Length: 435
Image (cartoon, rainbow, N blue to C red; front, side):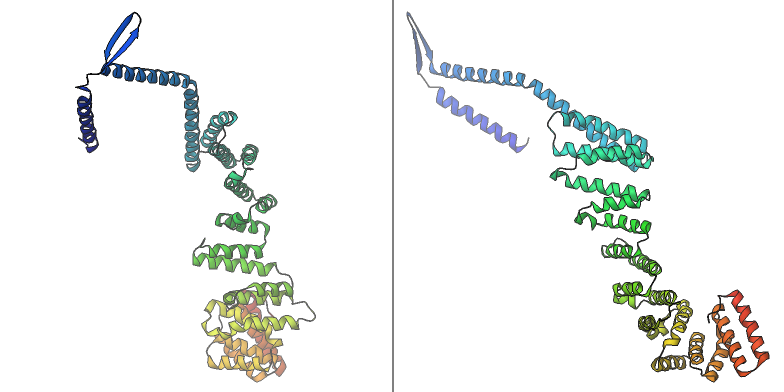
């Protein structure tokens, strides 16, 4: 037996003993005079009768109150049943939505709407009713979107949005706007997506889910600069792994370079890059190559050449740590800077080549530098060595092109003809010649 029951039993016996001691020897009487009658009753009987009458009246009043409250209780019971049906419909709609059963999900969501509507029309709308209304329409809209029924989706969306104007429904409104942004991005409607994004509160626009959608939107609009900033925020929020973040940021930077069509635009992008990016060989070579490309036809590209030389200097300093795949692009970029180099850079190139005499790419770069400085003897020796060591077809074609020019400069027609033939053969299998 539980201890609580034991205490109740002990208390009951104690009360009975106290009542027996108090009332057992009570000889008091109560006399009621009703002329010409007189009624004598014991005090215990009168006290018991009064208590019994009180209990009887109390029970009667409680019964009457319970009888009067039956209609209200019935109303509450019906409302409770409707609420249970609403939440059951929401759970069913969500389960079917996750399972990919969109038709069933839409039907369950509509059932939830049908059950919650009478509750809201009864004039006792609560925050939970509003939430259920919005979520039901939102689930129905989500199912309609999956079924490509845009008309039904927009209808449910508008009904859901109407109930999110209250201050208490701010979270619901954020969710509705986020779903609208998702649908617009899924349908490749950039203008619509930008309109919904503009309506987002500032706090919502910084959330990871919103930033992911914004990143997809920047891809639609080809706004790679904004896409890079968005991807950087996502990387700070750890939305991607470190490897994925680095790859995505690098690709967006590359795309931003291609979007630039003059030197000033590229310089603005360069200023927005952080220190790590300015020392990333892949990015540096890409932006310098793009700068050379956009200024190729300019009459005065000397200032752009100065910028390119400054940008490429960190890569030049870390040449020995460059992977093999980047060495050929490095010399292609650097040979475009050769016409603008001064005596100090000439010495740096020559020193680097002497420190690594077996590197064919440095042979090629040094030979090109000497050629532009009209140091024919040094360039001829290095070009011959590079022709035997290089594996890149386009660079090899340029080597034979220079050897042909040097042979013509010496007046050696047979050697020039042989070099021209080699240059043409390698040019066919590689890239076009670079003069």
